[in-house]
Length: 170
Image (cartoon, rainbow, N blue to C red; front, top):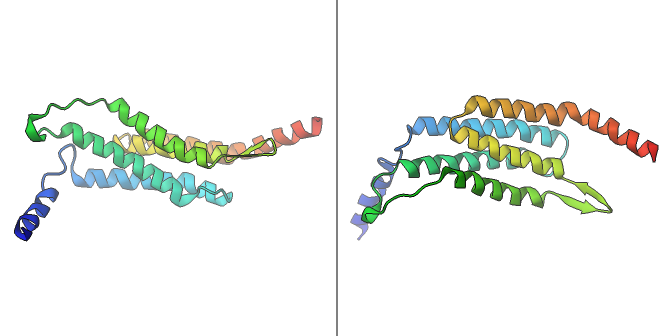
Protein backbone atom coordinates (compact mmCIF):
# COMPACT_ATOMS: atom_id res chain seq x y z
CA UNK A 1 0.00 0.00 0.00
CA UNK A 2 2.76 2.47 0.93
CA UNK A 3 4.59 1.62 -2.28
CA UNK A 4 1.57 2.69 -4.35
CA UNK A 5 1.35 5.92 -2.38
CA UNK A 6 5.06 6.63 -2.77
CA UNK A 7 4.83 5.94 -6.52
CA UNK A 8 1.71 8.11 -6.92
CA UNK A 9 3.10 11.24 -5.23
CA UNK A 10 5.80 12.03 -7.81
CA UNK A 11 3.25 11.47 -10.57
CA UNK A 12 1.20 14.33 -9.15
CA UNK A 13 4.14 16.67 -9.73
CA UNK A 14 4.96 15.50 -13.26
CA UNK A 15 3.08 17.01 -16.15
CA UNK A 16 0.88 19.19 -13.96
CA UNK A 17 1.64 22.30 -16.01
CA UNK A 18 0.01 21.93 -19.38
CA UNK A 19 -1.10 25.49 -20.12
CA UNK A 20 2.22 27.16 -19.33
CA UNK A 21 5.71 26.64 -18.01
CA UNK A 22 5.95 26.52 -14.19
CA UNK A 23 8.25 29.58 -14.17
CA UNK A 24 5.65 31.56 -16.11
CA UNK A 25 3.04 30.65 -13.51
CA UNK A 26 5.45 31.66 -10.73
CA UNK A 27 6.19 35.02 -12.38
CA UNK A 28 2.45 35.70 -12.71
CA UNK A 29 1.86 34.85 -9.04
CA UNK A 30 4.78 37.05 -7.93
CA UNK A 31 3.56 39.88 -10.15
CA UNK A 32 0.08 39.62 -8.64
CA UNK A 33 1.59 39.69 -5.14
CA UNK A 34 3.69 42.74 -5.96
CA UNK A 35 0.86 44.71 -7.48
CA UNK A 36 -1.51 43.73 -4.68
CA UNK A 37 1.17 44.98 -2.28
CA UNK A 38 1.22 48.38 -3.95
CA UNK A 39 -2.46 48.90 -3.14
CA UNK A 40 -2.05 47.26 0.27
CA UNK A 41 0.80 49.60 1.22
CA UNK A 42 -1.39 52.61 0.47
CA UNK A 43 -4.11 51.18 2.69
CA UNK A 44 -1.57 50.45 5.46
CA UNK A 45 -0.18 53.99 5.31
CA UNK A 46 -3.68 55.26 6.04
CA UNK A 47 -4.30 52.72 8.83
CA UNK A 48 -7.08 50.82 7.09
CA UNK A 49 -8.15 47.43 8.39
CA UNK A 50 -7.54 45.58 5.13
CA UNK A 51 -3.95 46.41 4.32
CA UNK A 52 -0.82 44.92 2.87
CA UNK A 53 -1.31 41.22 3.58
CA UNK A 54 -5.00 41.21 2.71
CA UNK A 55 -4.49 42.85 -0.67
CA UNK A 56 -1.53 40.61 -1.50
CA UNK A 57 -3.49 37.47 -0.64
CA UNK A 58 -6.53 38.58 -2.65
CA UNK A 59 -4.37 39.31 -5.71
CA UNK A 60 -2.49 35.99 -5.40
CA UNK A 61 -5.73 34.05 -4.92
CA UNK A 62 -7.36 35.64 -7.96
CA UNK A 63 -4.24 34.91 -10.00
CA UNK A 64 -4.14 31.33 -8.75
CA UNK A 65 -7.79 30.74 -9.63
CA UNK A 66 -7.02 32.04 -13.12
CA UNK A 67 -3.98 29.77 -13.47
CA UNK A 68 -6.00 26.79 -12.27
CA UNK A 69 -8.67 27.59 -14.82
CA UNK A 70 -6.11 27.80 -17.63
CA UNK A 71 -4.65 24.46 -16.54
CA UNK A 72 -8.07 22.80 -16.42
CA UNK A 73 -8.88 24.04 -19.91
CA UNK A 74 -5.53 22.69 -21.16
CA UNK A 75 -6.13 19.27 -19.58
CA UNK A 76 -7.04 16.79 -22.24
CA UNK A 77 -6.83 13.54 -20.31
CA UNK A 78 -9.87 13.62 -18.04
CA UNK A 79 -10.68 10.30 -16.37
CA UNK A 80 -13.39 8.11 -17.94
CA UNK A 81 -13.35 9.96 -21.27
CA UNK A 82 -15.37 12.81 -19.79
CA UNK A 83 -15.86 15.74 -22.15
CA UNK A 84 -14.85 19.10 -20.78
CA UNK A 85 -17.23 22.04 -20.90
CA UNK A 86 -15.65 25.31 -19.82
CA UNK A 87 -16.71 28.93 -19.67
CA UNK A 88 -13.90 31.32 -18.71
CA UNK A 89 -16.40 34.00 -17.69
CA UNK A 90 -17.48 31.81 -14.78
CA UNK A 91 -14.01 32.23 -13.31
CA UNK A 92 -14.34 36.00 -13.34
CA UNK A 93 -17.79 35.74 -11.77
CA UNK A 94 -16.55 33.41 -9.04
CA UNK A 95 -13.53 35.54 -8.14
CA UNK A 96 -15.65 38.70 -8.20
CA UNK A 97 -18.26 37.14 -5.91
CA UNK A 98 -15.63 35.84 -3.48
CA UNK A 99 -13.79 39.14 -3.25
CA UNK A 100 -17.08 41.04 -2.97
CA UNK A 101 -17.93 38.88 0.03
CA UNK A 102 -14.62 39.82 1.69
CA UNK A 103 -14.98 43.47 0.73
CA UNK A 104 -18.49 43.63 2.18
CA UNK A 105 -17.05 42.56 5.51
CA UNK A 106 -14.83 45.65 5.55
CA UNK A 107 -17.78 48.04 5.18
CA UNK A 108 -19.27 49.39 8.39
CA UNK A 109 -22.36 51.56 8.78
CA UNK A 110 -22.64 53.54 11.99
CA UNK A 111 -24.64 56.64 12.85
CA UNK A 112 -25.61 57.29 9.26
CA UNK A 113 -21.98 57.16 8.09
CA UNK A 114 -20.41 54.49 5.94
CA UNK A 115 -16.79 53.47 6.53
CA UNK A 116 -14.61 50.98 4.72
CA UNK A 117 -16.13 51.40 1.28
CA UNK A 118 -12.86 52.48 -0.32
CA UNK A 119 -11.01 49.62 1.35
CA UNK A 120 -13.61 47.20 -0.02
CA UNK A 121 -13.19 48.71 -3.47
CA UNK A 122 -9.41 48.33 -3.14
CA UNK A 123 -9.88 44.65 -2.30
CA UNK A 124 -12.08 44.24 -5.35
CA UNK A 125 -9.42 45.97 -7.46
CA UNK A 126 -6.73 43.64 -6.07
CA UNK A 127 -8.86 40.70 -7.22
CA UNK A 128 -9.18 42.15 -10.72
CA UNK A 129 -5.43 42.79 -10.85
CA UNK A 130 -4.83 39.18 -9.83
CA UNK A 131 -7.11 37.99 -12.65
CA UNK A 132 -5.19 40.16 -15.12
CA UNK A 133 -1.87 38.74 -13.90
CA UNK A 134 -3.19 35.19 -14.08
CA UNK A 135 -4.09 35.60 -17.73
CA UNK A 136 -0.68 37.15 -18.47
CA UNK A 137 -2.02 40.67 -18.97
CA UNK A 138 0.79 42.26 -16.94
CA UNK A 139 0.70 45.66 -18.71
CA UNK A 140 -3.04 45.90 -18.03
CA UNK A 141 -2.47 44.92 -14.40
CA UNK A 142 0.25 47.56 -14.03
CA UNK A 143 -1.93 50.27 -15.60
CA UNK A 144 -4.83 49.38 -13.28
CA UNK A 145 -2.53 49.39 -10.24
CA UNK A 146 -1.06 52.78 -11.10
CA UNK A 147 -4.52 54.22 -11.71
CA UNK A 148 -5.82 52.76 -8.43
CA UNK A 149 -2.94 54.27 -6.45
CA UNK A 150 -3.47 57.63 -8.17
CA UNK A 151 -7.14 57.51 -7.18
CA UNK A 152 -6.33 56.47 -3.60
CA UNK A 153 -3.48 58.93 -3.00
CA UNK A 154 -4.07 61.97 -5.14
CA UNK A 155 -7.83 62.12 -4.85
CA UNK A 156 -7.73 61.71 -1.05
CA UNK A 157 -7.09 65.46 -0.66
CA UNK A 158 -9.75 66.39 -3.21
CA UNK A 159 -12.26 64.18 -1.41
CA UNK A 160 -11.43 65.78 1.95
CA UNK A 161 -11.83 69.29 0.52
CA UNK A 162 -15.23 68.42 -0.95
CA UNK A 163 -16.31 66.89 2.36
CA UNK A 164 -15.15 69.99 4.26
CA UNK A 165 -17.05 72.27 1.88
CA UNK A 166 -20.22 70.22 2.16
CA UNK A 167 -20.15 70.17 5.98
CA UNK A 168 -19.41 73.90 6.08
CA UNK A 169 -22.49 74.64 3.97
CA UNK A 170 -24.79 72.77 6.35
